[in-house]
Length: 109
Image (cartoon, helix red, strand yellow):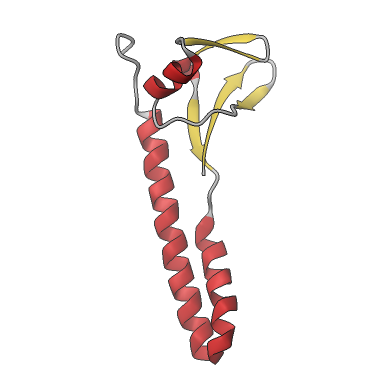
């Protein structure tokens, strides 16, 4: 899952409720390029994204549990398949993070 945040000098990492694909979309949601977060002013360019997914392990465990119905072979196949699906989701999430963090505002680059 993609999470957006700013590094506040007084509060540390402050997570935003908003979600956006890039900074241009975020500025559009706010209606401006400067935002007020917890009474502090930040540029939309100060906003960063991180991934909080970590679904590879969860997928493997869930796949293994579902595979219990197929015996030992089912557990192995279920774990492998669940891990692969979770890993794919993690990679897609990392691509979204890279896209957001590499984005600019028109006229601000």
